[in-house]
Image (cartoon, rainbow, N blue to C red; front, side, top):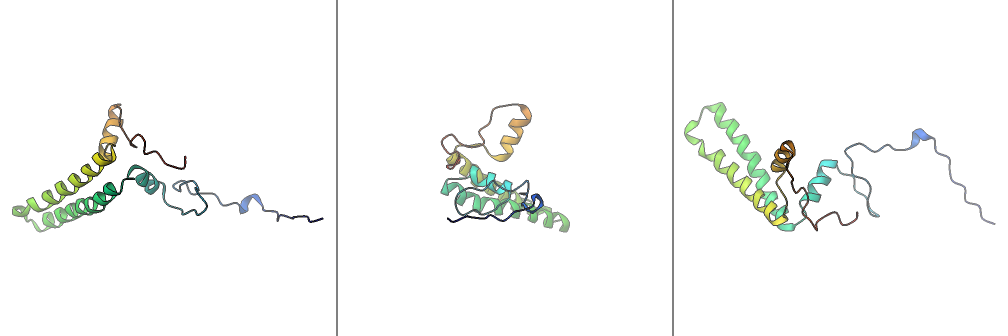
Length: 129
């Protein structure tokens, strides 16, 4: 007769997940912050992710460039950060049109106003739920 003995674990030895961690899924679990899991769930289409991979850095560069130009008082070059910001948001907007959902800022405004919004496009819910 074979008896399997399991070691006793104290209740304090159990790992408590961080509030921002995603719940474990699948045989190989990679922990990621909750906001990143939400972002990946809302951006599943490869073209949308590619457009965001270009658009997000352009938007960040626009803010940084605007700060630099403002600190140096370079007003005649105002069009550079405006162009970067417009191009970055246009690419992200195109990604959300492909995805079929609203942009994060639009979702936030619609939520504040009590209007309906599309956070995750129909038919693109998480595959393992």
